[in-house]
Length: 567
Image (cartoon, rainbow, N blue to C red; front, top):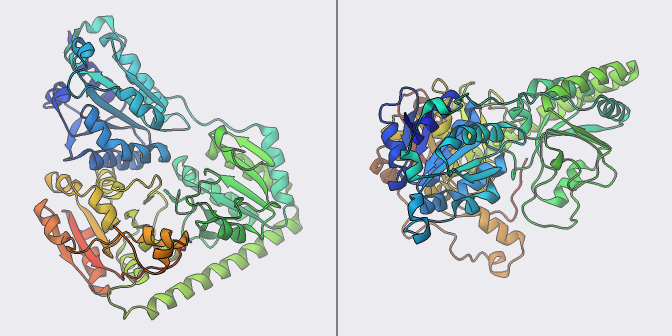
C-alpha cells in the first residue's frame, strides 16, 4: 500500500525530476512530509511564490527537464500568477501543483478553497484537479507529456489534501514512467523544396531567428544555413528575446530587431525574402503607426513546430510546419543542391560585406563606451562593458534590466555560448533573480551572473534567502537608477504632456532610496556597492569564481531618454 503523494512523487522521479520548488501551507503538508527522506527529489524552499516559480522556470530552461513547483492553495497560486504568465509566454514546460482542501469539505466552500483550475487554465496548456487516487499515474504521465510536447508550456495539477493521504494498492496501478514522443518530425519535403527555391532566388534575403531555435537545439543548423546563403541573422526584439538563437561573435549576427513598428519596417526594408525560424511574428509591446511592422514587399518563409505561429499575423510564401532542427538540416541540403556557382560567389561576397559591417559596428560601440567612461554615476554602456570584461566563456547570464542591458553584451560578443543567455520574455517583474538561482542548480559547474534592475529585483528579492540557505553561488548585479525608467520612456513615447515636461508620478524609488546592501545582508547574502568601472569588473570576476552568492549594487545614470532603443 502507498499513499497518493508517494505515488505522485514516484512518477515524478521516474521522469527525471530532481527538485520540487515550493512554499508550503497546510494543504501541502503530506508532500512536505513525504519529501523529508525522499531518495532522489530535493525540496527547495522559497519565502514567497514569485521567486519559487522563477527558480523552477530557470531550472527548467537550463536543464531541459520538467521543473516542478508546489504552491499553497488559492492564495499561493494567486501570488504565483505573474510568474506563471512568464512561463506561459516562454513556453517553459513547468509542472505546477497546489494543494486543495479536503474533498469532504467542498460543499462548505471552506477557508482558502477556490476553483484553482479555472484560475490557472488561461496560462497553462492543461489544468486539472485529480479526483481519484487511481488517476494519479495517468495524470502525471499526461502532464509531463503535454508540458514537453511542442508547443511546450506549463501545466497545472490541483491535489486535494485527502487525496495526498489516501492509501492505494500499488498492484492495482500502472506505474509506467512518463515517456515523451520524439519531436523530430521533418516538414513536408515539397514545402522544403519550395522554400529552398525561394531563398536561393532571393536578391537580398535575411533570417529572423527566435528563442525556439536554441530550445530546439538547432543553433548549429541555423549557422550552416546562414553561412551557405551569406545572410544576416537578426534576433527577436527585446519583448521576446529570451534565448540566443545564434552565436553573438559570429560575423553574420546582426543582433535584435527594434521594439517599435516604424523602426522594424526601416530595419527590414532592404530585404526581399525573410526566413523566419523559431519566433512569434511579431509580438509587439506598444502600438505605433504604421501598424504593419513587416514591409509589404517582403516574402516570408516560416519554419516552426507550432502551426499556430505560421501565418498568424502575416501571410507567408512558404509554411514549414515541423521540427526546427530537422527542417534546417533538410533546408540546408536542398539549398546546397540548388545554388549555382554565381549564386555561391554572391553569397560569399555578401557574407564578407556583412562581416566588415559587423566589425565596424563593434568598433564604433567600443569608441562610444570609451567616451563615456568618466561619467558618474556610470553610464549604462560603461557598466555593461565592465561586466563583459568579467565574464568567463562558460558563464550563464540572466537579464532583467532591459533599459540598461540593451543587447550590449551581444553587441560586444561577450556571451561565450548560445545556451548561457536568458532574457525576460513575459515581462512580469521579479523573474530574473529566481531564474538565476534555478539556472545555477541546473548547472552547478557554470558561473551565473544575474543582471537586474532595482525595481524588477524588488518583486522577487526574497529569493536571496534561498540562495543563502542552500549556498547557491550566483552573482546578482543591481543596475540601480532608482526609478522605473522604462515607464518614463513609455510615457514620453505616448506623448503624455506631464511626461514630456519631465514630471512623473509613482516612478521614482527615492525618499527613502532602497539600501540593497543592507537588504541583501538581512537575507544572508554578502553585498557591496561599487561605483567605478574597473572595480566592478574585478568584483564580478571574483564573485563568479567564488562558491557563495553575492549582490553588487551599481549606481547608474538616472537620466531618462525619450525613446528606448534596442539592437
